[in-house]
Length: 297
Image (cartoon, rainbow, N blue to C red; front, side, top):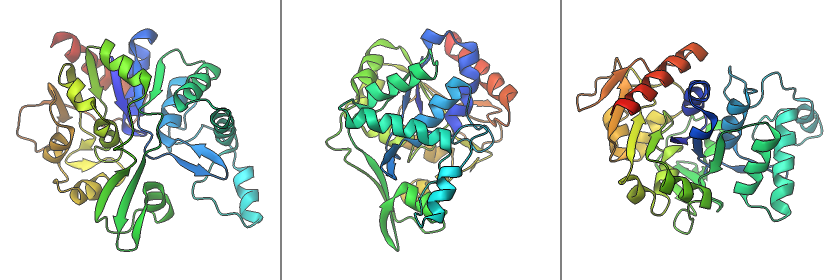
């Protein structure tokens, strides 16, 4: 199975999938359009959350960073007068340093991710969507800015006028992504933001065309017609679709099976499940249901 992932909803589902699928059968392509350089190091929020989840060390309260991390470096930088956009934990920062040193030494992001996965003891395959630089930018009344600046720096409190993926025209899917697209028969679009998480992956050259040849299962990130967390609703309205499962479906495009929450008002062909994942048992339940659906369809 090939899973396309962002950084919150889909990692919750991966928590269950990694327990139920053989390690060699779970492959994850991760959004990198939210990556940003902080204090000289590349932070890849979605990649890091997927890595930490599969390694069993993710902070499952915040769904970013490592469990039981400390923030001494971040706090001392603030004392010195250096304000960082993201609050980075000490162990989390160590991973960013290692990745950035690999990149500065000439490694691709794919190779750096492979090294990090190995160091964390991850047996599943984790691949960045591209080795090229892509950034999600949002246009607001105060100007255009990186998504992280909008969401973290301004706490998502501004109106979004439009969204674009800078660099997407010249970017190519990573070699690992292309290899897995060729090999895997089933692709799962996880319950991640359809604009900023899955949108950049699907916008890469040739990806949508290749998906037409696959069995595609999509899980909506909405529960009861609302996002569980994050700015999905305002982002969807900004790109011209309703903040509903109808909007999610239109953004994702052709899918063979669309899974929505049991309380969704969606009226087109779909399958309804309890998609809210509050704990690991919920993740296991939903993952089991999806695996069964795929095997039976």
